[in-house]
Image (cartoon, rainbow, N blue to C red; front, side, top):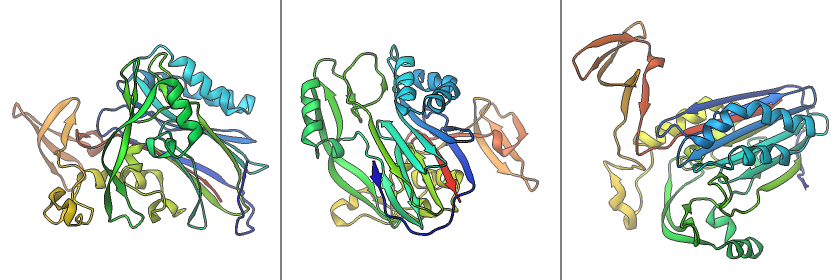
Length: 337
């Protein structure tokens, strides 16, 4: 258990959970969800990949999974349910589940993959859950031994985007990005996950900490956020920020010129005075029909015209945006005040 020296003496009396989901690319992020009882709050965030199978399974069973965690007070029960439900799936998913005890202020976290889970107090990050990426695994002799025993190798050293705390700077660093399974020829960004049938995987990370007295908040995000926003950026450390604000900020960074230009050694990736993580144009849909022209009306509705020259007046919320160069984006924020 991690004990953290804290600040403040306010007694936490109110808990709120809000979440946001933007399926900007393939539509494979799991819907963030939570369950609160008199004693506990359980939260779940996940990110599917290589198909929709695991995503649909977890979405359809999320409340039963969270209820089982509350009843047994064991995160391992919930994660094992996820593994069992997805055991026959060719697709995969990253997953993180948290369990908070209101009376003891104990927060437990279990995760498989690269879901980002961070805890904040007084506008500072006080805890970050490890993830199953190459950078984390290669730092541990024990975990590297597990990889070797399973026939898994970190591979593909290439330029990787690393967002900085200031929110305006993106660095490019040479890192290993994927794991390779020698027997099955799988190539995945994390070495622990749901699904992918019976291929070997590392066990989940489980951590436990006592939250110091005072207000605090927790963020759980898919890599659609983590790839664009540093966990210590003020957007995440600020207790007033909502899940939707985080998702919209990540979306902006994916599709709108935002980041400062890269230095000379990487200046070939700059365009029009910005570093652009993605230059793919977005496609807009209404009921699966591609919108060719759209104009915002004064009353907030939108005039849209389709490829066959037909047109409609629609609500802005009914327009779906997709971008092949971006990522799906999901976030859950739990606040205790």
